Image: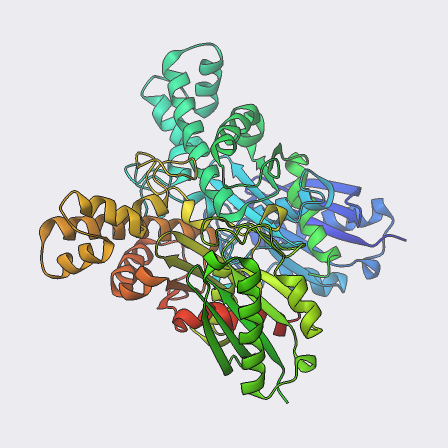
Length: 303
Length: 303
């Protein structure tokens, strides 16, 4: 019989729980509201009910689990299991979410960065399957990234998740909270497009994209500037990693994948030092399930 | 008894051969001219004599070797052992340097990119010792880089060495042979400084550095522009990798390390997303021996 792990994807709005087998199949699933305003204890109690229901539906005993992986927006303390993100999960910071679950279900539990979890999910059952080295760029409210090399997520000093979205694309660009100027996130994430769009009366980034599709020149210029920033960022990432596959994920990255595939294609076409034909550009395949599947994959992989 | 491997560092001018033990100590060594113009067969014959002399001086039987590692400027075909670099090693391209050595000495032999070998050497016995994730930037005629993660050199698609020196620093910068504009190499390598210096009558990059030290304002401006490019490039590499240690190597990188340490320090001081105090900036410690020691390290490591 195939091994099964629980994957939990903790977002600011929703928490997804799934029982995942070693082929990446979702055997059972539950989605609950995060309801972060009700406090951590209430959230943990609801998460436990969702896990119980998922195990029951899948017909799996907790003792048979390979573990519980919890994908979560950072920062968090991996060793203590403490959530430290007060931006997406206000009021939950300082609470250990790992130990209560490990104790209750008698299994290993572990926090993993949500961007890393998404790429692990894509590697197990999505668009990064079979790649020895894969790069995922997640474009949404921010721009995040993750790199998988030989089955292992690349992690930096102090075990931290690198901040790939903050590589510099244009040193004359806008200041970012990262301390730099003209980083990829400051030029191409949703808020950057929305800010530029507001000057022309567009409500948000999606309104800019819609107006650009309808032929409005100012909106097209804003979209093109964002795509140019992605082209430059992808150029740098191609040369730094030479990934076999580049995945675009995230709300904006997936909805407007054609735009980013074209931008990445322009970079690849000029990159004479990159091995020809060895780098593919694809859309993330698992959508909102990637983090849940990947958090489970981490436990199935012995993580 | 400690294991011993042979490390060979093949450069355009010189070839260094060393018998290296598993602590990185150089038990015996030889240096010969590459004399690439005399042809590959003559070069191989001289290399074999140098290896024989090194083994004899170290009192080591070839049968006891862990292998022969050959650091070499790329490109080369790792599987066939064929050198394909016609720029640094004209006339040697198409020749298999690995099989004759493996056959003659009855041991494993393997080619490794010279920048990767240098970082492996620094990890075994130099400035990257003990680091889980290390980045080396080599500044000279070109700008190369290598990354070591958990003891393994990061390699990209088709097993190729990434081209870290070609990440983009300023999209409005000069065109480079890589196909991009304003990559780090195009702005901060020796030829970039020399080109800018020529407009003010300086003979080469070192003349620019010397004049800058002596207080000449145009030379100082050229040096400052190069250092600014390194600051931006290091900013991006910090965020992409979060390395525990950043090593500067190469002729220019080592001679003018103080300048680059300061530039990297400026980037680190602004990088609020990087874990505080977790990233060190150091000068490569092994100088010209790094490639030779690292090529041997690859074989000692079971590579």
